[in-house]
Length: 481
Image (cartoon, rainbow, N blue to C red):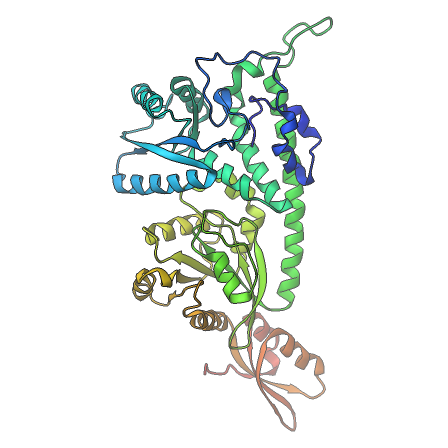
């Protein structure tokens, strides 16, 4: 999302160009709105992402060329250097997905972050010298920077200083396609930007006065902040409407008594590929991070005759920005309300256990930590990693969404897990209670029917609530076959 202090007028956001206002973010016609203001001295300027040292496009990552990026990671007390390096490896993938190249990385041990610059002034100057040597455009930090830290670092480095959150937001902005997805991303970007408006200092100075306007007046910063907050409220209201629509859809699906299965997992673990394999959903599949952001739901018919609603969800990642978790609440509610989570793990990845832990951390954050989970280790066709992991975790399945390996076993396992949520019951329904017979067929899975003199004897799988409602016709709870 463009920075209000980098050639973009916040005033133009009052009348967004497209649905939910997302198109206004990419409109090049806004460039040059601040051309009459003071420019950064030539010796201080540098091509790059945004802020005082911004490039031509005004985006978080420059689009007109492949930026050169220096990555910075910090290991604190009680933390492992290997974990920091693994996190930097993932950050390099995120930077590549955003359209830039990581050319160097810097690692530092600290007892605590420096309040002013996060890494300390001396280390910042060291990175400045390295950046000059490799002619890098932007420095990206693996942890989130405070607005003050980002502002101070840009002054010392002479180029843009971003954090992991900014890179992930940039990727989401590139990939959001639906009206809801674009609104969610814009909301997350605005929440990220609001506390960072003050860093634009010079360009958000006090408005010029005139006859009748002299005095303290209202600063441009105050104007921009007020307009941004207004836009945030508008997006929140729009997404609440989407949430209400989702609740209505959920109620309609609940009437069918079909269970909801949410496919979750680390980004690029193969969730969309698995949904396509299971349901012929034709969801976009690409070998890159966050290729799809919009939830897709399809009906899945299981081998035992059950029908469930399977939903592909947005991928998770380490240190997923809180702004995104909050903005994507309407999408992530699908996960929280699911009856079963199919947790897809890249069995060929370098750190599958770390990916699983990161996903479970986000699940707990959104209130889905207690939803039953089925582990599925994907990419069996890329090595024996998936099989080894499946052997280690009881009840899990190793599959290949690409080749179809053990997909039938996965569907049977999902069916078993879904059936375990129901109860086997035997009912004797009088002949004059046709409404009860219809209710049993509608709310459960009828396994057998036998006509008797006093009525119809039925064996069926029913939800616990349905068994309670039909207790007067209950002969016994049948034993599991």
